[in-house]
Image (cartoon, rainbow, N blue to C red; front, side):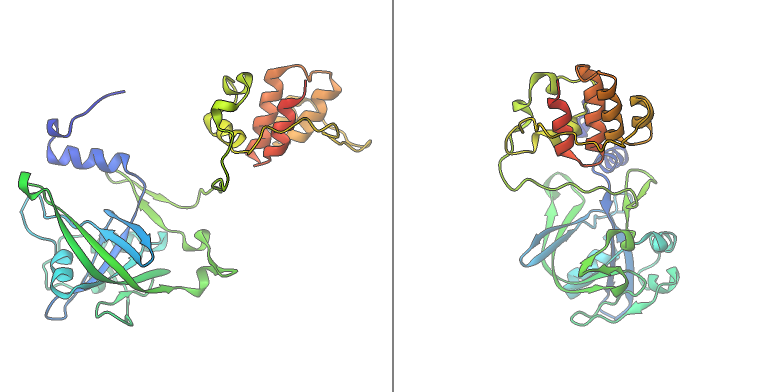
Length: 307
């Protein structure tokens, strides 16, 4: 592991190193207006949510390192105490990139990027009509970050006073991440798209923990850390169920390797038992891992308990 001290890097290298590791980051497409009513639209990835009662988000518009100039967004929010934040879908990325160019303060980036203005209900700044999800925000506090050592960052705490969510992304009363199709910022010029998703449930009761797993499971060369985490999330180590597995007399399967390759752990288990290989620990670990990849923790545990 390479250790890097911030003081040993240039500002640019330090900036990119931080952004490469703290990733992916959601993108706030911030709409604001100046004291003359001129609209501004700019993307920021120093952004996230920090509370829900009341809903609080934070934004980090920094003073430009090269010029020492404050961002139009920061100045507008400080002057008016308001802004909007529109989330960025994949369909908006290239237009968003146009808005990121360094235009003069009197240029309306909504027009430059070809986005439509949607009128807010409680703040003056408009939001991006093409965004599936937007928030109206009021400034709570601006925190200057380490000006005593030449720091150029700001942390703006914003209270969300209204949400706007497209009905097209709501399924069964919940926001569907697939329909939102949001993008995130990585390091350098890299972005990510939220199309490769998975689900995992946070434990509601204390689990046994990885340290309580049997040695042959915890030290497995086949089961990964994620696999061990799934197995360890149970409240107690299961007991072997004598009725597992329960195959119909007509059940058939090919070899263990063929069934595993085809994503059929139950078929692989059948083939293993038919071949009398249930004492092959490595084989059982491979089959258990296949069950875990299908989120079938119960069958994985039962497979591991077979001897």
